[in-house]
Image (cartoon, rainbow, N blue to C red):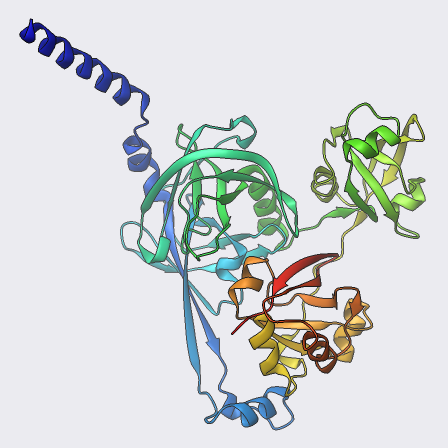
Length: 459
């Protein structure tokens, strides 16, 4: 009897192990076939010698006051990932991987290194296209991210912390995810372990096809916390095609401000479902105004494409060719309407010359309290941005503003409901806030502005 029970237990364990082995995915074949198309990207940025700055340069006085020795020429290096999309040397990666780089080096899995040329980069989607002088290279296969299902296995290959060809796996956690201040990308959310250095690397489905570019993580520690976001490959491919042909990206716009349609708002407008983009303001003289779109309209379809949530509309409009005439289905005062709108061109993203900004003696307090290095905008910058005030983010020093998504080049328009005009005014306002309390900062980036909360440093 004991022998029979032992045999039964062994058989049960064998069957259980066989079932488990069958159910667990095997990534070895995928990695062997596709790993060679993944590359390591290293960049070098030069910091100019401050000792050679002219005395009329704004940074000259800053370094004279606050640095015991004028800094010499320095180089900073960073690492990222990418993948080959064409055998003749075209490579996709993130725009932030190569941002402001003086030199970009691509290393293949066979240890060959190439100097890469940045064909173009689009910060709004965080996509960049590189080119190396090579041929006959292994390339990835492109998949369809629209066919991805939540819960499906996916694989990332990249160079986290500089460890080449590292493989991590997980599942698709969500699709079409909107992130703050990222209006043009329906992110794929996964729980794949993504760390610094993975940026720009491919996200594969189980067929060995690239379905996304690993771009961002949500973290409080600086490392992976199981929340990673990838740019769908179809979005990246569209951007890459424009970068390859023109070196830049052209987008459409219609000149409206939108908000999410809640169930309560939908009911008040006579809609049975909370779907669509609610118009909260219309730009005077803009494309929408010319077409007859009004405040309180709910856009349900744009160019035949359904607008399920407000975040869908900016993506659809941006992907529409400027100058084209498209139909807009909307809901107005309980009645469905269809209008034609001529899509306008979105202006290129503002590019501020940070080195020409004015620094003041108050700069140290900004770093200590907010974790931000700020400066006052110059008159040319104010004119360029069509602003009357605001403070420019020169650098992000603290973890709190970094976690809130504040970036170098952002403009802080207000603290709470108080518009900002100077560093002195900001510090006076901060002095009235207790340490460890949150303050609301109105951040402008490109054409959009939104509030973020930052906790004042208690140290």
